[in-house]
Length: 74
Image 1 (cartoon, rainbow, N blue to C red):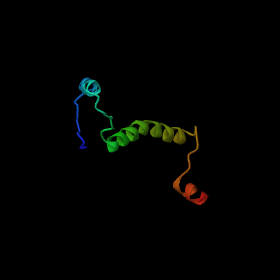
Image 2 (tube, one colour):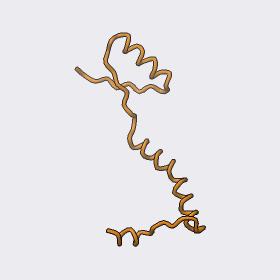
Image 3 (cartoon, one colour):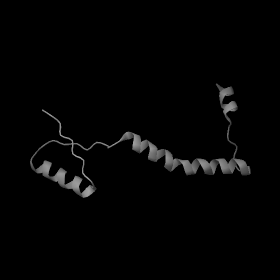
Image 4 (tube, rainbow, N blue to C red):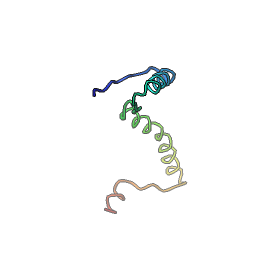
C-alpha cells in the first residue's frame, strides 16, 4: 500500500488526525519531523553549559584539557 504524509500545524491537529485514523482502524505512526532541527536544538541548549565550564576553567574552579593534551592521550 502507499504512504500518506500528513503535516499538522500544531498538536491539536495532530491529535485530531490520530483520533480519526484510530476510529477508522488505519495504522499510523508519528515520526520526528527533522532530525537536523532536533540536533541543532540540542546543540544550542547545551552551549550555555559549555560556556559556563570555560568560565569556571578561566576562574580556576575546574581544569579543562586542551586539544594538545587530548591528542597526547591517544
